[in-house]
Amino acid sequence: MWVSRFPRLLVAVTGATLAAVAVTGCSTGDGSDSASAASSAAGTRTITDASGAEVQVPAAPSRVVALSEPTLDGALALGVTPVGTTNGRGQGSVPAYLGDRAGDIPVVATIGSPDLEKIAALQPDLILVDGTTSSDESVIGKLRGIAPTVFVSVSGQDWKTAFTAQADALGRAAQGEKVLSDYEARVEQIKGALGPNAGATVSIVRWSGQPQVLMKELLPGKVVADLGLARPASQNMEGPGHSVPISLENLQEIDADWVFFGTLGGGGAGPGGGASQTGTGAEASAKALVQAGQSPGFTSLKAYTAHRIVPVDGSAWMSAGGPLAATTILDTVQQTLAAGA
Image: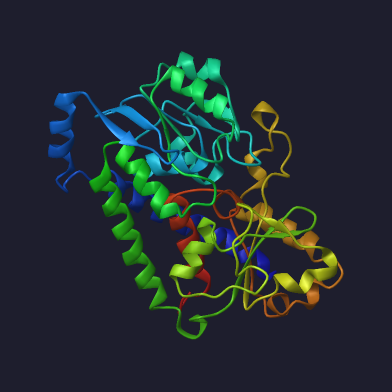
């Protein structure tokens, strides 16, 4: 069956590429070591975070708590292993696409709900949050009472801008520039290999019994735009910061030359009461695609009849992330749209 070949393909490539990004993220041969050593002598430095607050942060933090999917992703891409983090959206543990890297990191928060007692027990010297962590100023204030807390970005902010701010907060600005430079080089490589798919329209669909679409300001939308790919009219706009439901009566709005199709959760209860990671990967998305095919009109979509609906890892495609999620998305596009794939 045509939908089953993508999960096996994507899993193999993603692992190899993420490993390459890890090496890049950990690179210290760019002059940042000397800068870090110099500021280390001062012990701390002051930065202004995305909330406008001035925060005195360690020059070289060693016990970092990352309380969002993007800050966990970004820390790992920079070679920093947090001492505490959050679960992934729709999951009972860390985001599935980061499992090999982050599986042993204690989970001390769910999306939007940090556990203050568990965080304090970790004795962090830096806490990283963003708009997905909490919009409650009192919660952020309590976190600031535990350790220096940097509000990296508001929800829906450009992922590169957010990652750059995070790299600065961690004292790894030069490494952050290298990670983004390598990302841009990979984008140009894939963009040049798209052949007849150059400029194709792509739809990004999260399925949860009915379709939801991701708008252009979110990370997957930014990545496909970097590749020169277009979006259907229903997705070529900014949204509320996450997926937007589409009624089954308007199913045609999800159609495109290619559809990247994912799911989050739905794999049964996981640790902590969330959905298990078995409900987020490409294989779970392939199963959800079979179920979606039973919806009236779904099999009439041009992408369906052309065998161009691609089951993807929802933990990377359908939630929030950073450079490692972007790399996973590039892997998918390269293996499906690039010439010779």
